Amino acid sequence: MIEFIHLPPELVNFIGSESRDFAVKAERSQPFKTSLFMILFGIAWLAFTSIFVVAFLGPLFAGREVEFLVNDVPTVAGPDNLGPIFVPAMIIGVFVLVGILVLGFGIWSAFKKGGYFVGTALRLIHYQKNKFRSIDWEQFSGDITVKGNEKKGSITLGMRTGKMTSSKNGPDRYVPDTLYITGIPHVFEIEQVCRKRIKENDPTPVIT
Image (cartoon, rainbow, N blue to C red):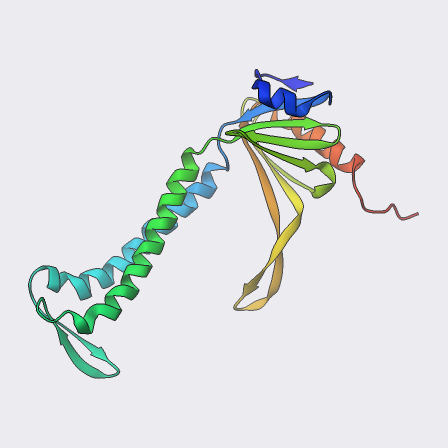
């Protein structure tokens, strides 16, 4: 058994009499690169929308009028006449809100702890903040990515579930769900255990 941590009593009770293959505590909920991408995307989105904020709303904040076209008709809005710019301001506000939400979620996910992961012969258990998730090994596809070294690394487990995503320049494609176990020691040993259990519980019929 690969175990380097003391498990909470409630998690021990949830596991019951099942033998443990490994038990680790993940450093983060997902790889930092994933969070960094969202943070950079949020910053870029806000930088882009700030152009429209300055162009449309900047003069109003300074007490001046702003001129723009509505259905190719020149329109003027000012501090005493905000009606014409109400709709454009609402649209700009939605774009700003999207950028703030993406940036905020990226920062939040970068610091979110990963919780405990325990592997048994039949399932992978995830425990965090009094919430348990039990996933049978047969739910994993066997697509495993490992990064890092023996002291600290990350495992990405592909699952059989997923969703279809549309593409502008091509056909729709299926994107499988993934489970991250990030910032753990002895990542290569744990990967071998996961791969072994997934093969043992593979529901795909064997072709002879």
